[in-house]
Amino acid sequence: MQPTDHETELLIPLHVSYIKALDTKVDSLAYHLTTHLRMNGVYWGLTALEIMGEPQVLDKDQLVRFVLSCWDDQNGGFGSFPNHDSHILSTLSAIQILAMKDSLHVLEERGMKQTLVSFILSLQTPSGSFQGDKWGEEDTRFLYCSVSALALLGELDKLDRKRTVDHILRCGNFDGGFGRREGAESHSGQVFVCVAALSILESLDKVDVDKLGWWLCERQLDNGGLNGRPQKLEDVCYSWWVLSSLSMIKRLDWINAEKLSAFILSAQDPEGGGIADRPDNVTDVFHTNFGVAGLSLLGYRGLKQVDPTYCLPSEVVQKLGIERDYQR
Ligand code: GRG
Ligand code: ZN
Picture (cartoon, rainbow, N blue to C red):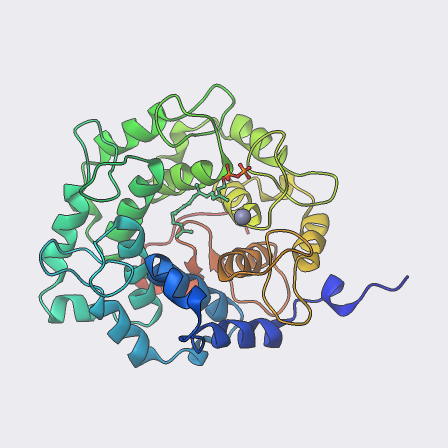
């Protein structure tokens, strides 16, 4: 049997239309049920569009206005939607959107930058870990978001680097991976956040990269897809969490790129557009972004280069002068 187009080609125009249409379904129930993820969703959609070379599909002024409308002038952070509480997850997405739209300068012009930096720094605990917001949940995801946000703002020198790096290293496990906090199981998503934070803090020399590289490449299953931890199912988003980590530790060639690329392409919806977590499941903008970003790391033709540490177009990161050393 001949393979169909969606098994061999990334259907770029269809995915662009799919992302564009998400913005117009404002009367749907799903739109209103997902306001708590809106800022992240805009970041995922815009990043995918940037990598596919079609960023103009979303209007720049409208994007910047939306981001600014989610700022909390009381504590300096960004929420996911106007009048929502600030959280570091939405705060990083807000900063990333402004960075992609070359608009970080508005933070200074509007006198927002110093309170924003104070908000981020206020989330660090005495042990070096980070909370996501004032309510206190701690996770290495929040540490990464804070470190990445400070780097994008050019304010990394305000961070207590040693306290931060020591905490990340304490979250490392016997198997070479990292968990969400000290003693927690290794998971590819947590490996990404810990490795990327160490990359930003120029401390990857403190990691046993061969051991970590083995754990990461063992995530590839016979069907070509990657899982997040042993004995679990493959999922397109791990193409990002695992591959970007391998790229940062310069072991990208330790997985079978051809098989992974075929797995990601097979999870496309050839009718409605978008990419799902695995073939024949419903598509969403999260997996569309991480599928496209994963293909970019694999050097898929026609895609813009993505930066493995910041998950932003390399051009944006280079312009800010914060790029680290990777394997492409
Ligand atoms: C800017 C790229 C970027 C990220 C921001 C939020 C964040 C920082 C990183 C998330 C890292 C992470 C923990 C990703 C994993 C997400 C995921 C698919 C979790 C699923 O976990 P389970 O237990 O699934 O439901 P498995 O596959 O383990 O069965
Ligand atoms: Zn997933």
